[in-house]
Image (cartoon, rainbow, N blue to C red; front, side, top):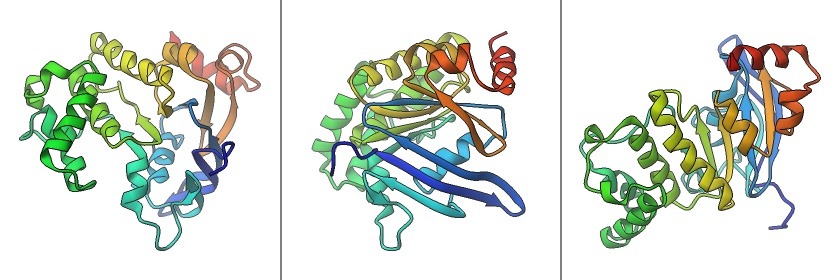
Length: 247
């Protein structure tokens, strides 16, 4: 693979639900180590874009390449691709009957085929990375929302993905728990993890993002550095949106 090829490349992506066109031709390239922040009003297509990237939603047309592999091509092993493109959801999607370590190590055993011992070793390392090593034997109902979300991040990390997608990772959390999740995301960014984040956490976007993308009505309206988009966007629509979020 050439060093300058994007890890994620989306070209001409369209997605419709019946007569409703949610994505209207998205072009996006994400390079290794980049943190791309996607903002925009509800219904602008942000979450659908993320879900199309690993085919949790089937795109209507267009192409998606992950590390040069065409996700849409017939014969592509989508499970192998999904190991390379981790996803963290708004709701934590943890199994209530498994403890934290069980949640993190399950896919390593079922998808990767590791032994229980191997999977638990890797799972413990992933929990340590998100600051939850001591909660390995705790069940989801014994954890705060912020801790549950960090377990979900550890679960994605354990598969050693090339890129992580975050879909509103803090929106289900009480305000005082948001910081712990953002701290993990900041550490991941500093360690070189490639990330695409859909979120309303504008302070985090300003301080951590390499690039901010503004979506509206299924289109990318504008993209640029946080400084450009937050301080001097080309579109009044973006100024209005940011003002409404930050006040």
